[in-house]
Length: 372
Ligand SMILES: [Zn+2]
Image (tube, rainbow, N blue to C red; front, side):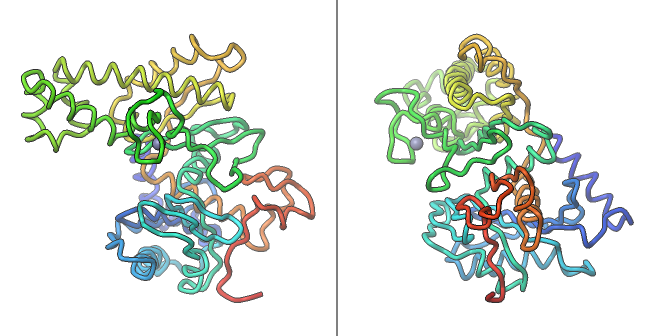
């Protein structure tokens, strides 16, 4: 996988004279069960990686302690502090304050994450939504380098996305723009994990593929025998089980894959019609597990999108699981206090060159460890 080779190269570069300590930014990816941190060079290389630190998801106090341990595992051997610190989290984040407004996986509401981490590490901290961070990684250092209009569609257990339009990373009125996993693709369709029915994610999210497969097996245990045998029980059937069984020639898994292709094509066509990206980047476990989905999406876009949008290029994300970490570090580097993001003509959050950029809602104010 490309991300592995990037990381392997990066690790080999540890201690290389070219990796200047003063140029390294710390990126932290806070997930539902684990934290990973990395020191990221200006060109996006990870020059030090913390590995996984599992947290108990036992409230902000305990999770922040694990996060700080992960960060220190990266920082303790470097001679100089990082130029910036960014945290990516699967949550609605207020970029002005670094507050986690709502993180369903962590069960958090209104947690001042940037301030709490800054207090521990003694440095300013920027917090960014993880899908947006992954998009920044691809935009700055990956498949989207040089593009000014792209949509990054992440197809994993859940389905998320983030848009760059006219060189601006879009946030939305409550910092939730790009939740295309929850656009309705089937009227009166399957129940989603969100308040809606018939969502894109409720058909092509990893959890939904597993659910559809389990229902199919329970409805026809004879046809489901290969899936049952592979998983060891209906409840243990996952999306990966379906893909493996499909490759082994199982007809039921084949039917599930073909259905998934149709839902995926429907969703991707809607995304491209809505956002008119020059480039659609596809990432996440669904794409790494079934790269065959990529040409299906591409031909659906060519055949079914509005003519002006139908020319969108389709690329596979270059970064894998480290995308949020790299994107958070990159985003923090570009928005560090005293940095030049407010003077750039175009910045990732869309803070354009003006004195008012500092007060713009989309221009984050890193929480500082010391009051101004
Ligand atoms: Zn939904």
